Length: 75
Image (cartoon, rainbow, N blue to C red; front, top):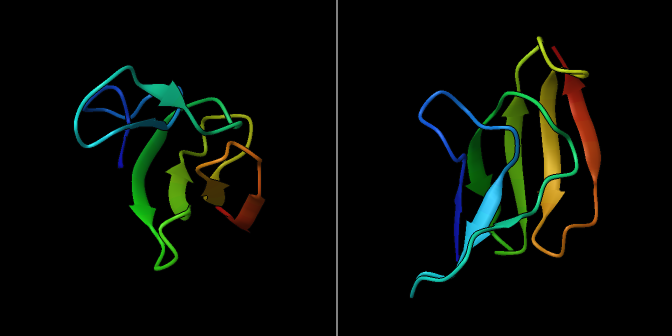
């Protein structure tokens, strides 16, 4: 599984796609300037940054199943 922001300057969502290819799917519920998704060791959860210009800025915890986990630290 690969996580990414759709553009080089961040994207409006964090997306996932199978390593073998396929159609990307949104996995973040927060919308805005989202960047730097990084998997945690369990391979199911990830961290990402939302820039302060969005509705909420800070460090967020996400999940591959799409269930929102929420804000960890506010910027």
